[in-house]
Amino acid sequence: MSLKKYFLTGALGLAVSLPAFAQMPTANQQVDSVQQRRQLEKAAQMMIATNAVPELYTGESSDVGPQSVLQTKPRRTYIEAFADAQYFYTDNMFLANQKKQGADVLVSTVSAALAPTAYDFQEGSLAPRLGFQQQWFNYGLTGPQTVDAYNFSTHTFSRVNLNQFDFNAMTIFSDVAWSKQNWTVALGGYYRQLNDAQNTDQFYNEYVPNWAIRYNLFTSDKTAISIGYEGDCRLTDTANVPPKNGSNFNNRVDNSLVVAGSWRLCRYAILQPSYRFQQTHFTTTWRDDYLNSFALALYIPFNDYVTLRGYVSYDILKTDGFYVENSDTLNAGVGLNLTVRF
Amino acid sequence: MPDFRGGTIKSGGAAAAVLGTTLIVSATTGGGFKVILLEGKGKVTLPNGNSVTLLAGQEVFVLPGGTEFSKVFSINLDKLVEGSLLVKGFSHDLSSLPLILLAVQDQGSQIKSGASSDTGQPPEFFLPPSPPGNGQNVLDPATYNTAAHSPLNNRQFRSLNSSVSQGRPPSNVGPGGRPITSTGFRG
Image (cartoon, each protein chain N blue to C red):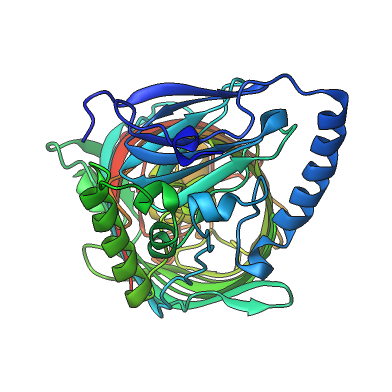
């Protein structure tokens, strides 16, 4: 076959090689095709090992050129740092059953972790992390909003601004995740403490060993589904507890089922609906909470470092606790995330 | 660079609609074909609607009798171009050769730096949301409740103050968490 027969260019800018273009396959050709397909499937499986892409027909490489698969490994990084700011509206700041208090909320997060690129381990990859995270919760930024409140330290009623409820969360975490094919298993733990933003008093801390298993299924080149189980055990120390309760009265065990879908609308937009069911059992008070959380998020990755997101979520919390209430909560907002690895 | 940047390639039972710049297509009987993008960006679409986007130096193929794409592979463009009669086997250069050589140069820089090639499908965006999470779900409800407690009603308030019969209740009593709590009633 002449070279010209293989090569079409011009308006389309295409180079095309067509040894038997547009011919109907005969029975022999079909048999050949099956044999060829088997060989190619085998070759495809060996592709990485041989570092070459299979030829679709004999002599393809001499026409098209040698096709050597690049297996450049990602540059190994050791530190992962991110900054995240999200601004959202919640229609139920205090998780109330009635008399909901709406508020705008700014949650700012910075995090840094020793998180080396995953290591090869047991035919999978092992990704350990050790890090620190600081978060700031700020309420009512759009203007002064007030709410009736009681202060148990001063035993006074007053009407206070929503920003009186601002607080910080500090977290030290460590975990390791092992992934193989579609499965990921994670084991870790963290220490978290909450501090009042006004006077920096600590009012809650928890030690939380946690574990998770997740299955990620790519249903097409644009869609994926992730199903996971997450569990944790919280050993807590809470200030200002009800009479006849110890500071550990918030000790609890959480078990969650998480289902998330991902749909890549285009390179710069990923739509992600998700659902979480969480059952929480308080081990000292025998209280049980049940959370059903529905969410829809749109992620817009500008590049490898910056992602913008918009989201809406609806949470339904049922509880048999005496000092808490059943609640429905709607959140909607936007967030901007900057992540760097080096 | 060509002005018209689209077209359809058909091979046996399979067909591919392509939108791109300079690319190579190999086709066989039984619908097998392979697309290699030499420069720019292109989209290959199968009759069943499945499509894949390729960047310079990437290729994808469909096995004879197959209806699905292989995974996207990054190949060594330099090796390909140097050994390709379809690129260098003519008496005159391809009009898009400068762009192809630019893509070769870019890929060479990536290989030198050890950076991974971009397949156009960042896997991290297929996974569940990474920390810190969205909205109030940044913290679990019970932890969040210690910071922004549910409003107390009269019954709950009386219960919290029942530990003393006279005088002020102790200052370390509350519903759990920070000492300030919203109330569902006026004091």
